[in-house]
Length: 87
Image 1 (cartoon, rainbow, N blue to C red):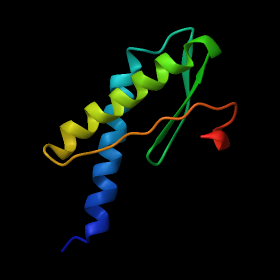
Image 2 (image 1 turned 30 degrees about the horizontal axis):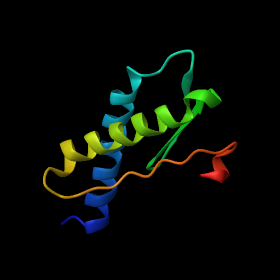
Image 3 (image 1 turned 135 degrees about the vertical axis):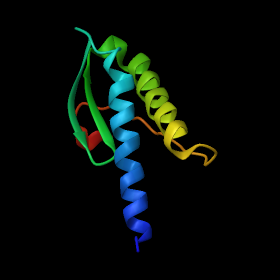
Image 4 (image 1 turned 180 degrees about the horizontal axis):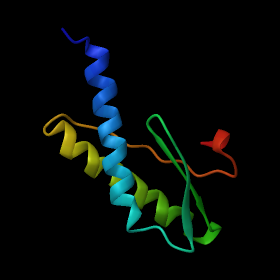
């Protein structure tokens, strides 16, 4: 028997891994991934590209969620700040 939490945590992990794979093609000298924790991806981006990569990150996360969750709606909220705590 499997608890609901196991299914939720496992699905979250799958979504994150797919999102990182999707994001990989966008990483370059302007943006780099500095952390991947639980259900978050932290990017370091040049200031002038922050909004562009915020949108790319949200789309990578949503695309990954659609693969795993199929017809279940999902949301992805990216934030921009000078530190991780500013999210």
